[in-house]
Image (cartoon, rainbow, N blue to C red):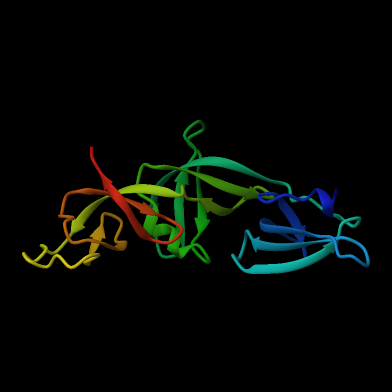
Length: 187
């Protein structure tokens, strides 16, 4: 158990019987009355966002979650399949609620898998990842309007808006939280 005043962003708490990640924390000390903490929590199992207000002296149960490295092997209609690189044990993470993360996972790459009660419940994708452009239209000569963009497709099937100078075969860095182009990668 942890006092609400000691809760920090990034902690995992048990709320309503399920593990939640603290996405935002705001400490409020009104002039009159007891201090409290406003929390924005993300359910690690369903992805739903929950907002809670807790008095700083109240206690909350910490969730017993841990991370495990998993090498992405493949996906099917129901799950993403991973392998533990040390034990070679294979396990799966259900796609439900994590569909968008599949567009950022390449076969053979290692990701952190969040486990709760010995079951995988979430996949941590790095903030930025490099991808190879597999489909891109050629930029039209003279189409140099400031900020001109086009849509390309990368190796995982993800569609990204990029500047018109990006060509097929080039590598680009993509922000995985927004799905936006960051920069060209020289490799």
